[in-house]
Length: 68
Image 1 (cartoon, rainbow, N blue to C red):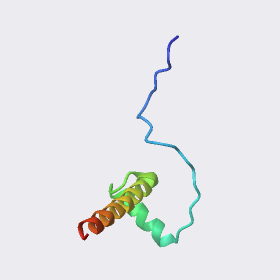
Image 2 (cartoon, rainbow, N blue to C red; image 1 turned 120 degrees about the horizontal axis):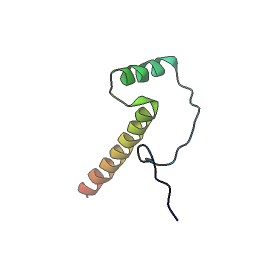
Image 3 (cartoon, rainbow, N blue to C red; image 1 turned 90 degrees about the horizontal axis):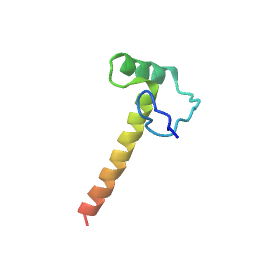
Image 4 (cartoon, one colour; image 1 turned 90 degrees about the vertical axis):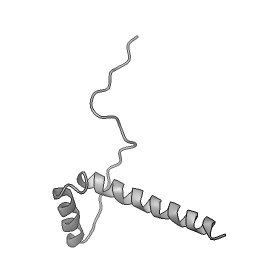
């Protein structure tokens, strides 16, 4: 029995579709970042935002630990 060969880039995780309402100014800023190549599309923007949040939380834990 052969397994199917996957084509394309590997999956990064679970795919979920969402609908998000933001002020128009925020969308304009996000679209500028995409156009400038700072992020890889909308999903790249929100992925980066989430990763940065996690880094800040980790830094806060380390800083608290160091202050003990």
